[in-house]
Length: 156
Image: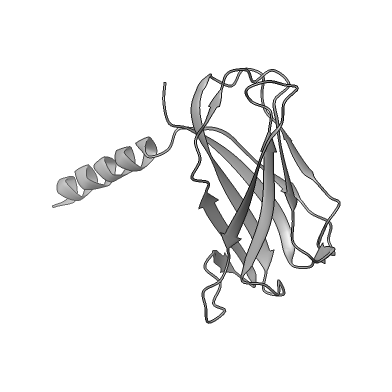
């Protein structure tokens, strides 16, 4: 019985390890009093990032004092040409209709990860950057603590 459990555990771990092909993952913190409208978070991408198709996962860490059920952000990158910036505006849902936080968390701090649906192609990672800023109407968003970016390769 122990051997079967061990085999099942190894099989499950091998499936989980193949699920994502993460090539980059980093978090940036916001100010302790919230995320100010003018604060753009920047992520410098390693110059040795493999060429190919990717998707971006955005992670948001927030406390229970965040007053909205969603957040609108702008994600910009220059992966195809270091001089041309491509921007996408994205709404991320953080709570359900009843106001229950959708992210996982403990002690009043929650993390919600969201895959962005558009794929993009990296042709040149030299001097590549991703920048994220909020585009909400409020000038400051108390409760937003950290914003993370994960690049997941989806093709060779």
